[in-house]
Length: 396
Image (cartoon, rainbow, N blue to C red; front, side, top):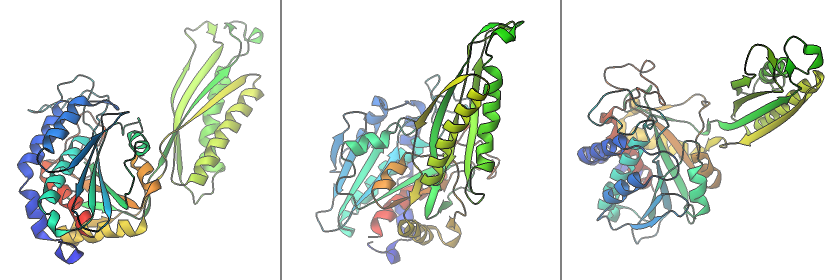
C-alpha cells in the first residue's frame, strides 16, 4: 500500500468498515458545537477517539488544538493531515436526533465531518503502518472560522519537519462522494475594511450649518464598487462588498459621522494589495471632496489558498484510484470563499480538496449550502473522505 497501484477499492472498504465510529463521532461533535479557539468538549472527544492508537499527542497552548503523530519507524516523508474543529455562531433549525444542543452555535460548515473523517483515518493508518514509511501528523485545529487557528498552531510548531500537507472540505452542493480540486489558487484571500466619515452634526433643517457625512458615505459605496470594474485589469478577479452602513439616530438630526464596512476577496496577492490601496484612496478622496475627513482601517484576513500543482495532481490520481474516473473532477476556477489552511499551504507543499456531501433528498445546486441554518451532511460520503485522507499518505 505504498504507491498508486495499491490505492483502490480495498482501501475504501477498510474505510467503510469504520463508518459506525465515524458517524458516531461526527454526530457527537455536531450536537455539542463550540466556537473559536477554545473548544474543550470537542478536544475531549478527539482525544477519546484517538485512544489506544499509539500516537504521540501534544495539546495547544494558545488554543485547544490537538496534534497527533504516527511514526512508522521507517524512513519517509512527514505528511500532515488537517481537520478543523470549530462551529459557526448560528442557531440550527434542522431537527434531528443530534441537532445542536447549544443555542447560537451550529456545525454549519461541516467541520464536525472533517474531524470525524480525520480521526477514522488515524485508525486506518495506524492499523496499516507497516505498509508505509515516514510519519503522519494529524492536525486537529480550532478557530478556522475567522480566528486564524492554523496560524496559532503554526506558531506552536505544527509544521516543524512537515514535508507536505492535505485537507478536505465538505460541500453540500457537490454530488455525494465526488472529489474536486485544482492546482494553483483554489480559494480567495479575505480582508475587511472599516470606514468612518467624519463631518459636523446639527439640525436637519439647517444643513448649511453642518457638514453632512451621509452623502459622502453614499458616494464612497459607489466609488468602492467602481474599483473592481475600473481599477483592475479585466482579466483579474476580485469581489468587494459593503455589508454594513450606519449613520444617524432620527429624521431631524444630521449626524456627526457615518460608518460603513465590508469585505474584499481576491485570488492574487498583487491584486489584493492594489484593491487595498484603492480603498484608502477612494474613501479619503471622496470624503475630502465633500468637506469631510475619513478614517479607513483595513483588517487583513486569510491569504489566498494556493494548491501546489503536483500535490493537486496527486489528489486527482488518488481519488481516481479510489473512486474511478467518475469520482474526481478538476475544478475550472477558484471560488471566493476563504480558508485559513492557506497559512499551511504558504509554508509547505500541499493541497485542499472538496468532498461532495449532497443529501439524498436534494440535488447538487439546490441543497442548503454551507453556512446555512438548515445545512446537512450526507454521512454516506464520509468513508470517501477517510479513504482520501489515508490515500494521500499511502501514495508515498
